[in-house]
Length: 289
Image (cartoon, rainbow, N blue to C red; front, side):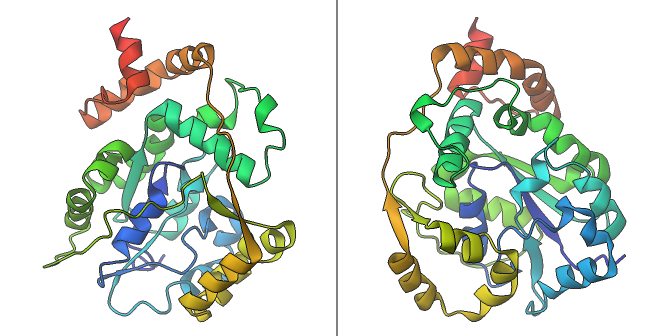
């Protein structure tokens, strides 16, 4: 076991500001991330092989005395990606720190569905029907998703914040994360107007580009770091198209079902974090009844 391969992980939740947090932390020269924000290495058993472990360590070869992190949201996607923490136990020390961003369940689920439409995983968005037993609800069971991490690294090594609080107080929240990571910094400048990974007006790759470049882990891990940023930006404009569409929104009936289905999980989350999530309108509706 090498305790220093990676010092921290942003483990989710998907569509809760993880890409923005990743980019904000990149502004700190004391933090290192691999070019591929989401290597997803611990989602399969190959990380337990000698080759898989060498490949993972290779992602951090360019770190120079920096704190090393990664940001794979698949690490809190039970049961679709099972056994993540078990693999982490076998490869990383329990001193690793974990950052977990969460979001109002209704807006997170809607954003996840729209994201899947842009990714080609949903073909007919207009006629899409939400399934209460789908992955969209499972990912939003925040207590159930983060509990295995807490059981391994301890609650003191897990930092939980909300998308709403983070986007409202970005600089303050990033400073708190750096403090949690024991990173001292005199000055940090953020682009407060930047929105990362937006759904509407997003550049979407064609099937060929998606298959052989944007969804190709070898490209993201080993080729992408060698390509100058301005070249990647020019190619993105040339090879991708900007998509505008009518976003999917959940019906009031589905919203009620979701809040009821998540009620026990969120009671446990409140007890775990000692936080008030009344800023989540869906959460507030349940407890106002």
